[in-house]
Length: 219
Length: 138
Image (cartoon, rainbow over all chains, first blue to last red; front, side, top):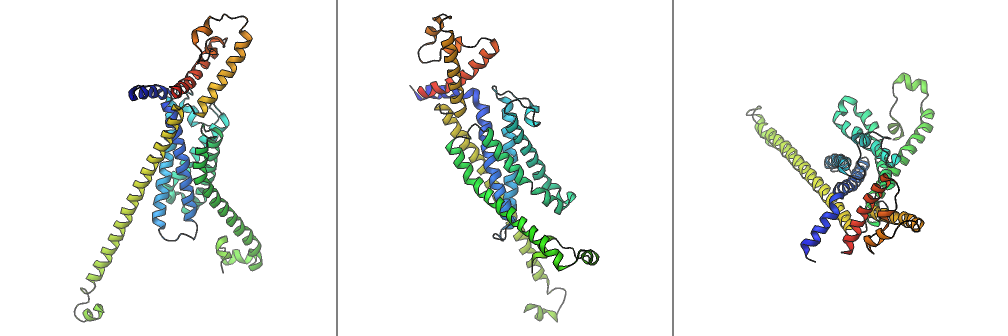
């Protein structure tokens, strides 16, 4: 059998699945990019990496935008899939699709969260930087939902190469996330214990020295 | 320093070189920052392209070699349902369809489903699975 014949056979075999393969590839790319972005975002908050903050911010932003683009490709290419044949509503509105409704909805919710929390960066002055920063922490939750969507519904979820590839980027991100949460909760609990002992509540209110929790902890 | 030397002559002009240097330094730094940002954006774009292409290729090869998880599972499921329905109907249906499908292909596609809707669905699924499997065999 010649190479041309083999290529023709391959083309006819892949043809009907082209949209499906594209969607799967875009989904995998989105998962890896979002994991890298979460890693970078969490590292930016750590004191380990002080220099190159501007570069890290640019990389974080670029990775987030690439993630959103990959998710859009992941969703839109499914419109051309002949087997699933979803409508635009099935892909945009949670709990509307009949195919694995729970996992699909988790993916849709994750996308909307990522889009809203990520793109709100460009309106952070209008939102208020502190408020935006507080909201931006929920991006980690959106990423976790996306990870659950890929592991719960992904066609390649049981494949070794997929699990290995996901683990390489997701495990460090989960580690950083756990560290961040544990540090934050420790700081909160220490503040709540230490604050009343230092200064009575009434005098704090009167003197106007109510500092953020992190400031109170520092010597 | 030079500022002390120029202080007596003209206080307005002695600062110009320093100011120019500061401006030049600032603009150089800004340029370097922008250049680095552009490079980072470009490398992220290429990383995205590489990740997408790699994933596409892996899935493509997997599908072409007949190891795609979804299609294999579908083919197995179709084969499983077809053999059970085939055995139950074997006594009543004629064997002409079986002989026409050949030995390698699933004989159940032509005989198993009773309703037209399930028939079309099953044939669609099995055609996808069969195409991948036959590609790998060829």
